[in-house]
Length: 206
Image 1 (spheres, rainbow, N blue to C red):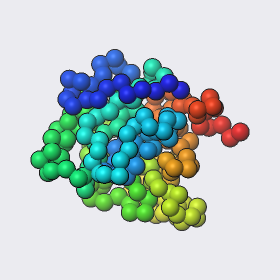
Image 2 (image 1 turned 60 degrees about the horizontal axis):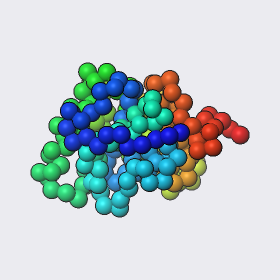
Image 3 (image 1 turned 90 degrees about the vertical axis):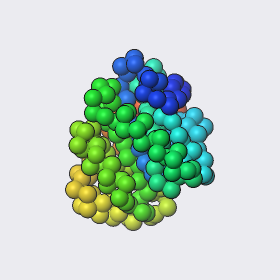
Image 4 (image 1 turned 45 degrees about the vertical axis):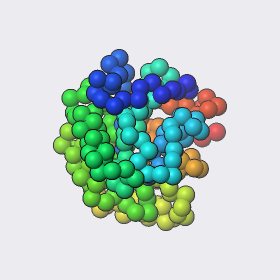
């Protein structure tokens, strides 16, 4: 796949207007959104990562093979910036996530599997539901748990949040586990199949 940072938007006027389908990636600061975007796109440094929470302060539109955008939104909570600066993000993010944005096909909410969703994530799930934006949950950093622990944690959160098993996946940007589920969500929303660096789709088992 060919991928590039196509837009680095600080205002709605800078959002793409070409109508290509978009999938938003959301999550708490430092939860691993950028690492997961890199893993999905087979690029190590396309989306910038940082040990300092709050590095993503604009909306980053990554164009994939000229027919899809993965959209990395600013993180929230614990960002190492002033409250005033954080306050400038909310109108920007909400202006993007309003349900009337036609290209937006769905949202992937990234949550640390060890911590689970806290108030901000739960509020965001409710807000996306009110906006009628399809949302799924990617439980990242699953490599920090054993396979059995990750599976049990996933089942617990499905029950707790009232989500179907098909809406929740345990993933790891470091090992690549669970990426097939993310690729399947994106394909279901957009009809576009992401491919690994060797050209195989994420559904290929060989």
